[in-house]
Image 1 (tube, rainbow, N blue to C red):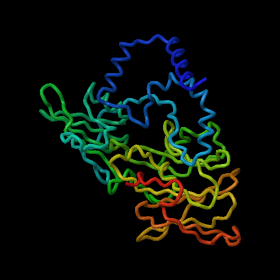
Image 2 (image 1 turned 45 degrees about the vertical axis):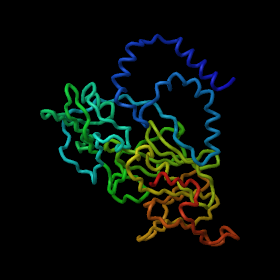
Image 3 (image 1 turned 60 degrees about the vertical axis):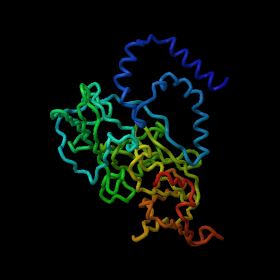
Image 4 (image 1 turned 90 degrees about the vertical axis):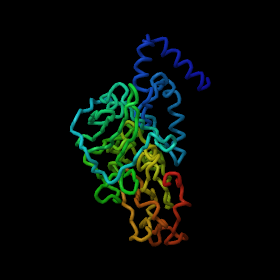
Length: 369
């Protein structure tokens, strides 16, 4: 039976088993989505539940495809968490983040990141809930209104200004938190160390197996999302067949890279931070990894222009047949990656091999514009 027919039959059976309040559903959908498109990484398409039967049929095929590919790509979103109620008040009036990105809504075509479109439809509390802002504040000053979104600690993430036109509030300008030099990255201490940086990393991310034996937390840190709020992300590594699987994300979304064993570095920058949060911001992070099963790699070093080279961290879990070497460095300043082999470990191979970032597996220049 064709996949299309399986999906059709599954949708028909699901529809026949349910009594749907069409009018109510339409009203709720309009209230949420007319001006507020669903956030890409946190919200499920409405068809996902109805198509669940197809997942069971095609799951084995999908997993087989991932195991044979370096670029595993994004995982299917996990269960959507129950929305929390944003707290009104307690948001700072001034920014404390390194820089701000300005959206000028009066100039069509100048705003590239349209995943966040500010609105006052249904009220500020509703907008804060839609965008998963822990805190919000709203004030009107004559024909001018301000909507602030804040983090749980009260730090300001973004402020949107509206101007009154007749009976409507029209978006005018939004200032959004970003990192230094237009980066998505939060200013962590020892930022370039592959390490656990945030205080409460996730226990797992979607795409990892339920049984997590043999999986290791490689890195966890904060970043600024597309509305300037501070979010958390974790990166795990674990075996999947004969490869080392990297999964970076949250309990509801993730991306992956399946790493073949060998002594050649792979560019796994695509899993380090969420690439769909970077439409107008810079991704400064280059992330290179080696899965060394034969024990031939003595060191992996990123040669950084104007700085001392950065050496890879080594990771190992009981049960792994080899080690994972991982190095993080500012992508636009990395001139080369150098692999040094252990003496006599790989007869016939050069002791030292140097690669440019562009010639390595996994290289995606669009990630580092």
